Image 1 (cartoon, rainbow, N blue to C red):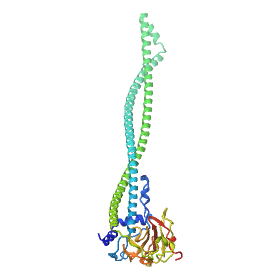
Image 2 (spheres, helix red, strand yellow):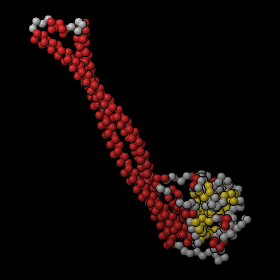
Image 3 (tube, rainbow, N blue to C red):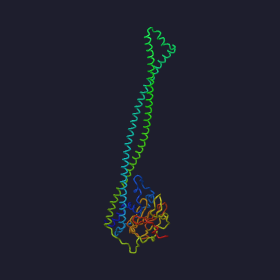
Image 4 (cartoon, rainbow, N blue to C red):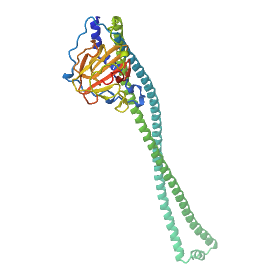
Length: 433
């Protein structure tokens, strides 16, 4: 691979540019570090701004091909190594999350299985109680029939006794005396009297037995009624408990389905990161194979020594400062410099353009590697004048300021980073410029 082709490889890898953003522009999304049960996708507020797709006027200008004498810089290799480290860290976080999610899913599935068993047991109890209620209903019906029969017999016996009593009353209570006087044989008369009394006593005993049976039937019916009420109340309580368990069952089923969906999404992310890691490793190997150290001009000041002496990338007032909170709990990683759209954006120090393209959340973005892990970022610009791989000098034009710097106002979003650590740009820019 020629040096020229190596630079084109770096410039044309969208996955490399995307992962470069993780290192250069945005911290790792908080969602990767959240617990599985409370995970939320990052909202649009977590990005530097909600950029629309660039219009035809915002397309980068014709890219300049690097000369054949240019070689990949050590900074490019360091940036790619940093990307690889970031991807490895993201892979580790996703694998940890997946392990926790699998453990949580196992716990939820075990709890769901227990709920299913409890629901089945309650359903069986309800079915048994329904059968008992039906049996008691049948017994109660039979008792009611017996009661009706006994009541009819009792009424008949009462009527017979009542007639006998009325006849005795009408005759003035002399029936027994007449029975004795009309008989010539005293033994016969005595026997007839015994028969008469036995007949009446038998009727009275039968009535008393009917009454006792009716009393027992009434007591049994009351017991059956109470048993039915108890079973009905038990069934109502069991039905309520079953509804609660079924509601819990549905909630756990939804949670397991959500976990499965989240795990599928994370597995896809993991597969993508693994593919990105493999690609980056190939790119690192290629860069390490062809990389050469290109000395900076002898009079060039190291970036670390330029603290407080860098020129401003565009003339204007600071509209948003480093570290300010926005979008809730997010902290700004750079500054927003207010400027009319179309003002010239210039490099703050010597270096090499390692990225010049549109990127979601940052619009048109330029990243310059200044060596020793220092980089500067210029976001939401338009009309690039430099391309990936170009060398730039301090104060050299890079692009024009855009109509929206990420806060709805025209200007430039600007960052300075050392490795993956963000620095306050105002500590590095010349005061008062």
